[in-house]
Length: 270
Ligand SMILES: C[S@@+](CC[C@H](N)C(=O)[O-])C[C@H]1O[C@@H](n2cnc3c(N)ncnc32)[C@H](O)[C@@H]1O
Image (cartoon, rainbow, N blue to C red):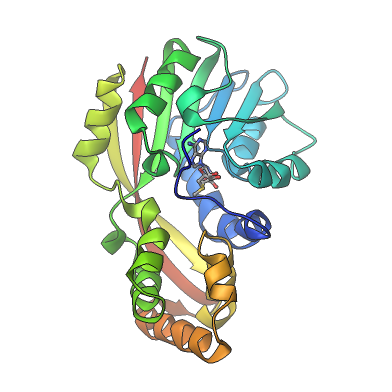
């Protein structure tokens, strides 16, 4: 099994759910699913489901007549997803598996979604071919991939502070979700995997955070570099957060921070 770069260990999955989901993954999922849009009764596959935010929202829209399957490589993410399975809406099944070899029969879904996962896969075309295989004829693909990091001021500020305090390798690891940010490359990969009517849109999500001092340590704990941050000297950690706070000054408001973050949303048909 390919060891993809973006993997959380220990408390990482719980921290992802607590600190990354409310401020960014959940509002993004709402915008993403509206763009498709989903319909009641559909069979929906969420690839790289993580702690399950997209699958949960999809289940609420699909309703009792629908069905949702969430697949992720990481058993820790799936454990958190399982614990947060909603009682209402479509039933959700959580399956551990690699996007390159989806644990799903041929043509078994009406919609396949993948929020902020594709850019992390070592074999993107292979994963997209698997999504194509899992879709019923005429089925809908929705893929969400961050634009390059200069379109995400919060993550850019963090990456720059990480480069200064922890070095280029840590910054690089943190930035992996922003490494497939060109619309043309995304469109070409989806077409190469066999999809038609590929449509790539640029969309901005407003990320809401408490003050940097309160929010940045938690955000970092929900990323693969969480253990590196936890091992840092307290003085260095505070300096890092202070630098991010200074860079994000223009985004401060009465409640903390409101920072734009830009994604591509690609839609296509089997
Ligand atoms: C940034 S998280 C996004 C999670 C979720 N879609 C969301 O929006 O909150 C990326 C997820 O991709 C998963 N992942 C990475 N490589 C994978 C692969 N080859 N197959 C399946 N999942 C993978 C990680 O385990 C992680 O849960």
